[in-house]
Image (cartoon, rainbow, N blue to C red; front, side, top):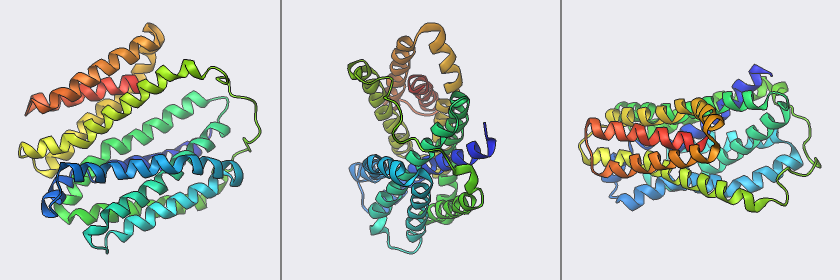
Length: 304
């Protein structure tokens, strides 16, 4: 297993996760300043993920035809350029910036996983574990850093930081290009699950539910905290603690699933995640923080 490749691909995953949640802590202040309601703020958060979701099938096809490395370089360029643009453009362009960031992130996500899978056939589990840990760090750090930069440099400063990170990652991809050369995976054997799609629908539904709850938890916890009078750094700390629980529980979740069964782990993870997320609207202070972490823990178990 090539550690340099894992670190580089993990950095790609980190950038996509960071981009998704970097505006969360400062979004309530931005919304107040520009007259946005909760629906408008929610759409700004969702735009990134919607664009990422929409581009992934095309990015996957292009990775098959052109190879994943060109797709990764393209995605990094789009993410970096559009992030830097917001530092000089008026605030009314934020929606377009978020959509463009999501397009770049979708290409990065697909291409990095494609390289990881085809280049680590004998140690795929270990490789995926390291990759997900590095990517998950982006969810943890993004609210903290986003809140700090918003507090001390204004909302556009977060985009300047994202653009700078993209530039560093682009240079690293050029310097360590040999780490990203992967064997062709086109024309391989049939998937092991071919013809058994009906068995996968419960897992698709569970993953869909888990992802939806995670989006609510990380996307609207800052709105709830803002209602209670929290400042952006405190909101970032609260989101970071919630994301940290989601991240750290995942290695343990795998062991629990082996011991008690995958269905039981998914079921109880979704139950805890639902309870933790639903209780956020009724609590404050230490109770708000505790239920945020419980929600993150449950969703991390179900996710794994």
